Length: 164
Ligand code: SF4
Ligand code: SF4
Image (cartoon, rainbow, N blue to C red; front, side):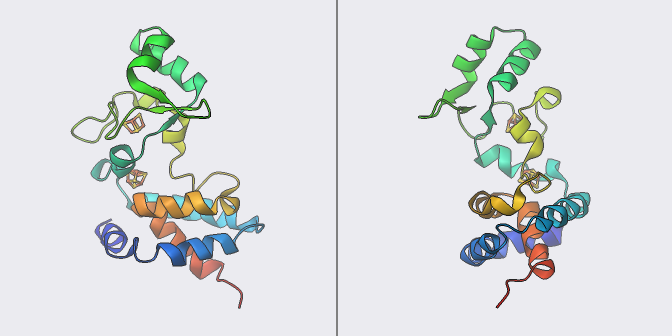
């Protein structure tokens, strides 16, 4: 894990533009989704999220209405109360956790609502999700936040190099 985290710390920012250009070159290539999902498996075998939690510390999670309902039920409060206390509404009506680090993040990097956490948290950094090849901007942004996402993108470059 140390190698992956060190490489991310030392290079992710300076390589952002290069990574974005690469990710844009993948658009329309559906076979990339399979490669990304397979790399997601391999890389997350080497990365311990409990030693990181950078996503929970820096990026407010999107919370869908069904997420909010499920988490509120788990906490034993009305959904409206949960939304008022823990979420903010974006200009387009979507909901997200109202600050970072996330209110549900414990000191040891565990999540207080792990079993019922938002789907966006469960799926982050979305490298195993259908449509990876289309999400160039989001994937590039995730290389700045997540060491595993960065590593997956770097390895993908070896599998799907930009055609010159
Ligand atoms: S940023 Fe990536 S590696 Fe770190 S905890 Fe989140 S998903 Fe895991
Ligand atoms: S809900 Fe849990 S997994 Fe999601 S950001 Fe907060 S602490 Fe992290």
